[in-house]
Length: 239
Image (cartoon, rainbow, N blue to C red; front, side, top):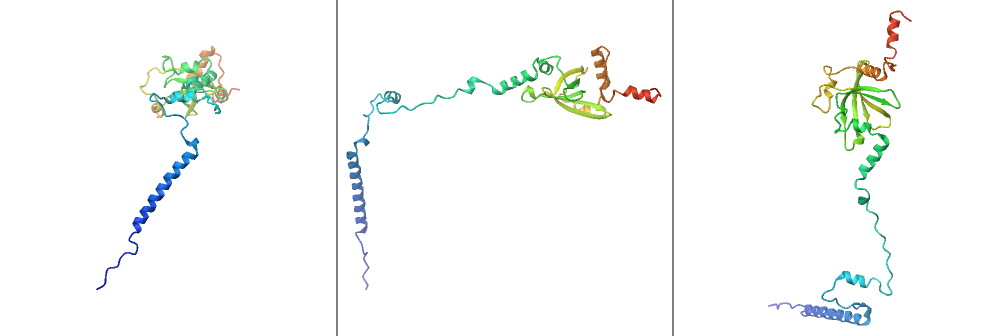
């Protein structure tokens, strides 16, 4: 009957444990000797007292001998303290340049009872181009009052024409109210006036009479209706 085979190294795990313990003991001795040879690695200051506060320790050791003072750059000035609302400041500076007397601001201010409203007939004079008149269909006011724009509708040669005008545009010389709507509609946008049954048609006659009354009766109309009387005389045979 065969005998059971024995392990070749019965003390192998024990020897391995002894080697590990020996290596750990040498490592501890090495650290202890290092601290003895290099006293600079020892703590420089005594242990803190029971009432120790770090802020006092920093103030005491700030100008110690042999230590260079680190230059500290002061923080920049806070923009919040200098200008609480920069967008509002820029808007006001632009309004001062584009509307120095504040006439356009008052014309479209919600607090003004005589402000221009949808349904009124407005006359816009431009620096570069012919003036345009029409019924105000909408007044668009976005985040800032400087973005205010108006939509005017008129008929030229029996064709409906709509134009947007920026109220504070440098190209706009003046905006005047020709005629106010008597019965106000309970709407902010009068887009229903684009339909044929609600369209007021051309406002050239109203604007021409308003200009004649404004100038005292001496008005010379420029544009497509300037030669209308001359064409009528030619049809009748007059030169």
